[in-house]
Length: 290
Image (cartoon, rainbow, N blue to C red; front, side, top):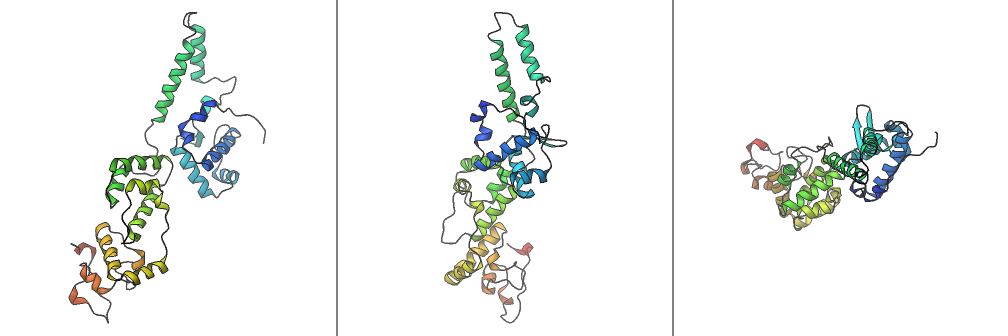
């Protein structure tokens, strides 16, 4: 591996794209820039990136996706390259179109305009960079109607504008859509009945989709303490959101379902005349729910 320089710029200190990265993501970005410098501006294969970052390939792919979503990596037909690499890492004998415009402007302006020309080109560069920052949303796995999907699923609809703003910032951070929504469904299914719902903006700010509620032992203790109130909450949540609690068994139709037959009947999932403690109850299909 031949040692050589790659260009860094003092404006990076105030670049919002870099400023929103975590410390670890920032270190990954720096190492990826070094790898690109050693590979003619192109990122090497994923296995090479994973080895350099000392992570598994799956984690390396996640990092690439996050930096791509942040606008720090551009996708090409051959893979990924650092954003505006050719513009900033040009070779001394191969000027980019932007540099050519700058040099031509310096040569052609009159003496009276020479002082203003560099400033005008700097302004053009700022405008161009802002346009690049407003490029259409990248293919990061988030659906086009992600705002509506999140708001429709969240049970406690308080402070919508604040929640949506935080949701958009979370997308820019590179959080996977599937991970976020799985965490929300887990929260809906496992929230204790004696706890108030968290406001959606607070839930997002605290990264609550990463919560891992207590396992089956705690759930069984909760069931023993709360009795019918626990099953009321489980079945009410199921009928409203279609989310079946893992603490109630594999699924509604399974013989291993732990919900008492009387509670199923109470919520219209089992006819009262079908309750027979010596037989597995015949459950109503989801299509028959009122």
